[in-house]
Amino acid sequence: MATAAEVAKLAERPEAQRQTTEFRAARPQIVGPDTPQSPYPILLSGPVQQGFGRGGKELGCPTANLPDDSITPMSSVCEPGVYYGYAQVLPPKDANWDEKHCIVHPMVMSLGWNPFYKNERLTAEIHVMHEFDADFYGYDLKAVVLGYIRPELDYTSREALIEDIETDKRVALNSLARPSYQEYSKAI
Image (cartoon, rainbow, N blue to C red):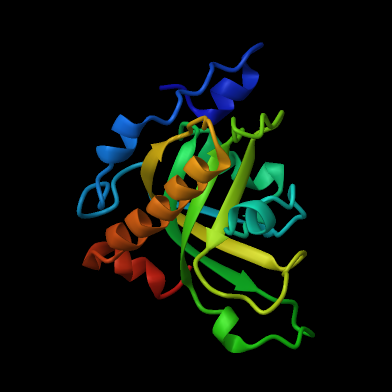
């Protein structure tokens, strides 16, 4: 499979496969080997940017978007799809922010064009699995990507997309529960 950076250079992006009932039924609940294998871990960081505003509002899954140039370490070696790992939000020094928000949390990440929404540019959208009290645009986000969950898919309905997102979250938590992955939760 082509990396996201290679796909971005194509005159036309290949059509994403459609999510099917068969695909959903066959999804494993834990993915990847027992220890992260090359090209993982992949470190990403950058200030959180305003995205499309769909994650939290439409999908019940708020995301933090990284600047285009900060996703190169991943897009140059990984195909479009959904990934798992850990993330940490770091507020500015003068921010009045509860420390519980600053620890390392599990995350799922979409790298690609979100075919359901027909995005025109490659994005990296990280869902930190933690309830934040407020938005954190402009705060620094560090992430370590540790594994691949599934390819980027297109959907016939928003409900099917939401169902897969919820499955992605469970798969990420199950996959990160292994001892060699938990080591990365201590610091990024």
